[in-house]
Length: 306
Image 1 (cartoon, helix red, strand yellow):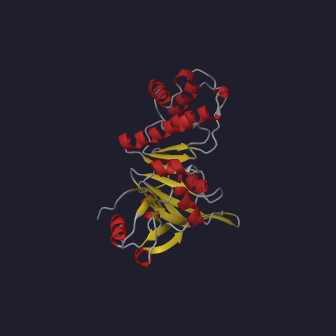
Image 2 (cartoon, one colour):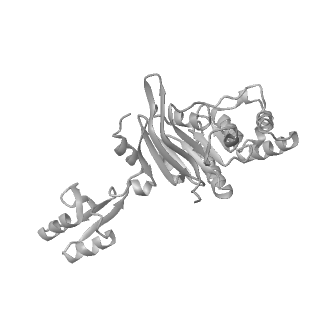
Image 3 (cartoon, one colour):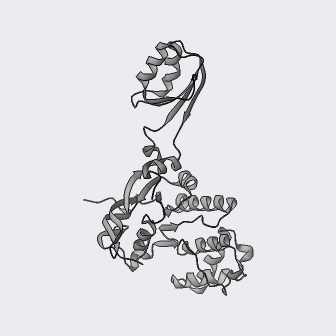
């Protein structure tokens, strides 16, 4: 029987440093071709997990597989890695650094120069390619490191805080680049980030880690189920309308005499609420749906604490 291949598969994964347990029985699957956001407060265990994925650290117990294989040299060749803290020798020119990395990946000198020039153009640093990186800003170094992690056309990109140091334009360029890699080459993207707005815009699924434990997993739309709200303002509230409120809402809260915020019951078709209000004699002044942002989901599920 053929099994469905996963880009990343962690099974009962635990990691400890002495008496400190940083990953606790982590079970996680990332599908081939998806963009997965791994979220958590500082110290939650995100970077520890990523270090295991690239072979810089080893599980205390449990297992991890990449594309169905245990982590080994063969599987590492499928990975492009962007670390949280970028450190590039300042005496190297930008193009020299990329050529050096490409040569390390096994490319010929000619191939290395071709890909280095292609990638430095892609990340918007072509005009600075012959400058030493000691003169680069943090954002420029981040872009250069991003170019480095795409050398060799990896099947999986592991990005640890990829937006660090980028200005708003750089953030948009990064987003477009990630989407391009995913859509054109079907690259699987696994990213750690505190930039929840960006995660919300590009990720197909997210996982939230707290104190080493995975406390939430799924599409953002799934994690908001039951938490979407409706703001309803009526000219007056009669007894009939108050009874309707209790019938259609799981919970509600009046903001003032006219306006209420309600969470509808799952069985209620929200498109029918205005009709029901009018049928019960209500004069609607405002009907507005609102949805939890990823930031609100994160705070609710983590309790706002580390």
